[in-house]
Length: 247
Image 1: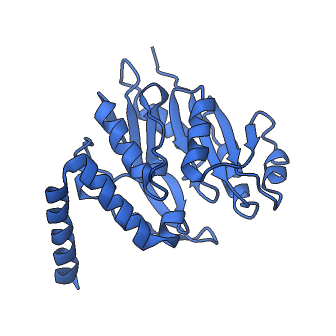
Image 2 (image 1 turned 45 degrees about the vertical axis):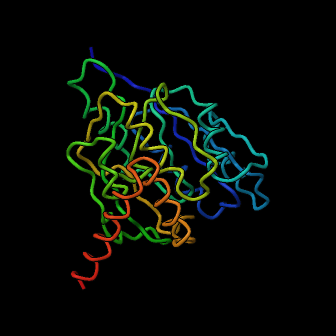
């Protein structure tokens, strides 16, 4: 019997009226339609919610109220989700193609039960939707929770986790809780499958890029918590040396 999972696609926004359209369009264009769409808005004043309501996505679950940051909003999305897999698409991000969800489902056609994590590759685009490059860190053939010792090898938006095993995001972290969350999910996962496809167009203007140094400091704390302080220090020294050698 073919597996037919339902996806919970979650977008969190705040004053993103100029970006949300492309995300909504990519969701509506999917040829695989067993999904729900959840928009968690932080009380936008620029018409973001109105754009969403006018998009033709009458079935969307839209919440607009003040929150305690992006990860608090994501936790609200998790609480609302009913699907088998969670998929987080930020405003401005989009599925790689209209058949992306279908491609992901076809990749697990030989499975007898739903894997705990599905993951793929990421293409980076600019604000004009022009392709910039493939993400520098590539998804490994086989993924374990140890894989992230070498950095976040799978983009958050290309990481689909079973709703039944996901924790809430840790609000102690303001910029890198997604790294912590993915590691926690992988620790709980019994099986993870690389779908061997590009699954997302990632917009190069994320919060962590805007606050790059603070984000890196938070990531160091996350990695130290999961992998130990001394091993994390050693790996970061190697990262720095490798960067110098490559220059």
